[in-house]
Amino acid sequence: MRASGAGDILTYWLALALAVLTVGLIYRLLRLRQGLGLTAVRDNQEAARSLGVDARRMKATVYFAAAFVTGLCGALIYVQKARISPDAAFAVTDWTAYVIFIVVIGGIGTIEGPIVGVIVFFVLQKLLAGYGSWYLMVLGLIGIAVMLFAPRGLWGLFAQRTGIQLFPVRRRLAGAPQPLSENAKGGPNG
Image (cartoon, rainbow, N blue to C red; front, side, top):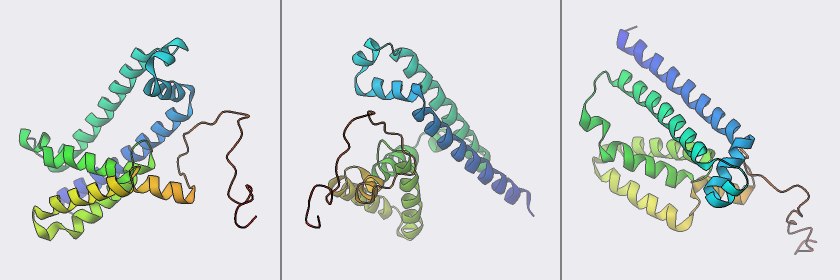
C-alpha cells in the first residue's frame, strides 16, 4: 500500500472518529442542565440571566469549544491535503457557501439536519461534478427551493411528517397536556 493511500485511510478514520465524538458530545451537552441554559440564553438572554444562567460564560464556553473542534477539523483537512495556502483556507465557495448550503438543506436547529445536509451535498457534488461551475448554480437553486418549500430543511420536513427524531433534545414541561392525535380528537376515523 502506498504511503499516501495509508495517510488518506488514517485521515478518513480520524475524521469519522472526530465527527462521531463531536455529535455525541453535542447531544450529551444539550441533554444536560447546561444545554437547557444554552437554550435559555438563545431564546432570551435577559430572562436566562434572571434565572441565574451566566450567559457570558455560556457563550464563551461554546465559542471556545466550537473553535477547538473547528481547529481539529482544519488540521485534519490540511494533513490530508499536505499543503497550506491562504486561498484554499479562506475561499468563500470552498467553505462558507458550502457550509451554509449544508445547514439550510439539512435543517437548522437540529443535530440530524447538518448530517442529512452533508449527505445530500456530497451526492449532489458527485452527480454534478461533470458540469463544471454550473453545479454551483444548481446548488443555489436547490437551496432556494428548499427554503421556500421546506423552511426547516429536509430533516425538519421529514421529522414533521413522521415524528421520528434520532437525537431528541427538546424538553417538555412535566405535567403539561400533550397535543392529541387526530384520532383521539374524534377526527375522521374516530
